[in-house]
Image (tube, rainbow, N blue to C red; front, top):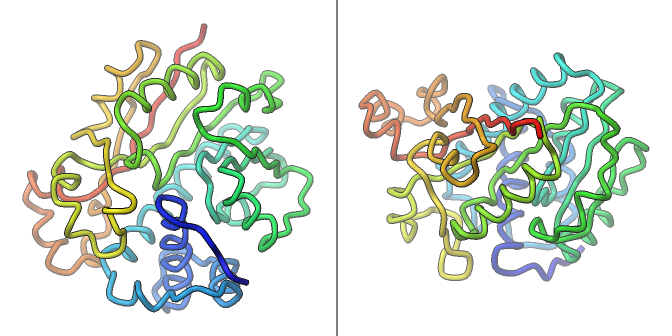
Length: 268
């Protein structure tokens, strides 16, 4: 199947490839058979990513962290409603489903069309939201009914501006009071060095928003409380080779890779 994705949308193929490569490793952090199958089905030159070993490691680590954190949330809230913003071809639902959660995948029309044609999801607890993350209409399509809500934003926040993220947080905190959020954040230093990125063509899809710590996100809306964060090095240094050794230096650990930040939205 051919794909005509371009710009930011095309970047969704990088984590798909990375998860497929991770699944093939005997010591892989995750197993994603869907990704392996989809890479085989899509008519795209995935070989262009062959040398992107840091991107591949980063996707593997962030997938592991988010799988672990999401599973932990679901253990505490078995009937949770999970919202996967800018989902791309993510398949986390199939790795962590407990048989009770409802899972909403949201992305732009071209992405969701590709997703629907490839995955053909039939589970009655998965739901497609075809919209921009900034569209104020989509939150009304989420059936919460008083259930705990978890919002996941992986691999996309860095492509938006600070003003766009401020607007998004305002919408999310208003629509989903008392919700939790896991978000991947990029540091300003990484953004300043984006031309060195080993897989993303930042001329077509530039990185725009970054914070040194998830704590800074509290400044974007008063309803946000920062709970904790984890860099992609902590707990995985052996996977990063020389970068893993350098990450023992606090400055490197804090500034030279992405993080997963955990947030909570205040009740109204």
